[in-house]
Image (cartoon, rainbow, N blue to C red):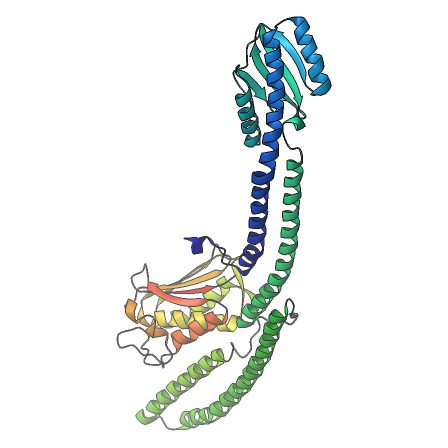
Length: 440
């Protein structure tokens, strides 16, 4: 339970590590001060005041005449700083406002109770610098006004303010220092996340503590190595695509010029299948190399993209519906996203009669593209298996006689290249639901 209640972020934990000891130390010092010093001093002051009040009350009770009260009042005001008056016919109040510091009332009340035999009442809140104490006496109520510092140690509040001010100052310094260090880590995390999604962050500069700068430099070195690797892969893919398509084009030309026959038709089909397989291999390798040949991010409208994909899916013989708001937009690699959704839509069209493409914004700020169909679907235990490259499930829709088992793998790879993912589920139409989720 304690672990669950602790902060999970580095900012929160670092702040807790520094601020918690400061707070505990201040609390301990304040407690020791109040327990060992303030209460002792206050108890003695309250006892002294209660003794003076008890002397005045007992002196008046022994001789309850106006002359005696005047003599006692003059002597108390001169030597004890007490103002004493008699309120004839009065009785003690029944209510008392409690002080903000309960220890004040408790200490004074205990001292008066020990010294006085007559009923009494007091108020420590009515006047900022004085105490109002009333004692039931012969003929009425003796009202005694005493300076506040005669009962309480007046330096206590100053001490508390100093402790609170010190705590606030130390906490502010700790917050500023920790925030500066955590901000450098946050910038590194943002740069790493952006680079993973193919977004260029050229203005990133290392900062913060030595270890954080060391990690930032390691990230920048890694980024450059990955860029060189992507460039090499892109160049290699372009060369392979050119070298393979040239002989395929010659073969297609020769077959086109050959006399029609069953053998020629079979060779054309084999050549078409070979070309399709090469396209899928290159598409998968291109995705592994960091996107559609290093394609840059762009802000596009989703509805027109889904309409284009729907046109291709209808050619497979399925009825395709599109539902997406006209103002729905996203910053993506257009060709990579088109290939990802197109693979899912064509896969659905090959195995179903009805396909529905839905684009919608997520409350978190991301984007969701859903491909539903009424086909046979994929068993739940085989759905993750269908995403593996070159996977051809026996009873799954991924077994396209024209394909090589890379359609779903390419779709998921493209989505993850944007920082999102592709998942499979049961469709409301009865078949399979493929969901492409992209972050905002």
